[in-house]
Image (cartoon, rainbow, N blue to C red; front, side):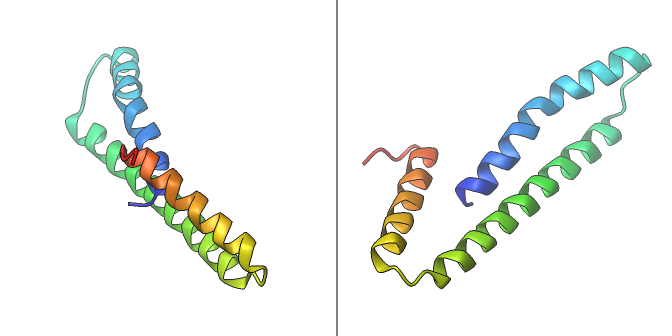
Length: 89
């Protein structure tokens, strides 16, 4: 998974249990089906946003005619992906 997709899915997924708990407390009931649907919806939205941002970035990078800038952006992106995956080599 790309860095953008990973970031955009992890944040909503981490806030989901809190939102479900607050909704259950306010409504006085809990629905596992509603909670599961909310998770799927949040994850799908995050993946869609991550893919869109990655696609746009790739298209922009392909259009660069400045070779040193293209190399810099490529190396920077890979370094960021490695740091988000926990690879510090």
